[in-house]
Amino acid sequence: MEETTLFVKFLGDSPKIRVLDMLITGRELEYSISDIAEQAKIGRATFYRMIDELLKNKIILPAKKFGNMQLYRLNLDNEFIKALIKLYDNMTSLASDKEIKKQKLEKSLVH
Image (cartoon, rainbow, N blue to C red):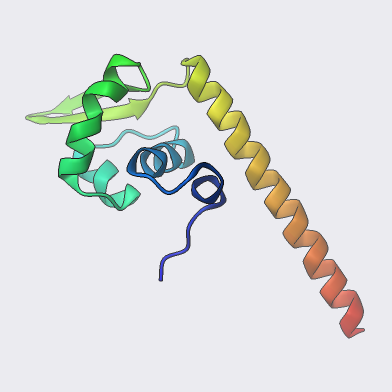
């Protein structure tokens, strides 16, 4: 079974949250519709149903175009996205700190 990220666990496992999680994780990259759907583990049809809203709200922006294939990127200037990235990074940092403390404790109990 695939592991759900902390971001998805915290905000709820919906297609939109999966897409945001995937885009925030690879925030510096550009993706095709197929890439986004595959990496977010949702169907292409599901992503097609949400793309207009994501574009309208400037969550994603069109990037390069290769022939008929349009690439998209996360809009890092969007205030909503900036807040989500801050949340994502804080959650990741807290989880990492917690895991480090746990491992140190386990190691000290062994010795």
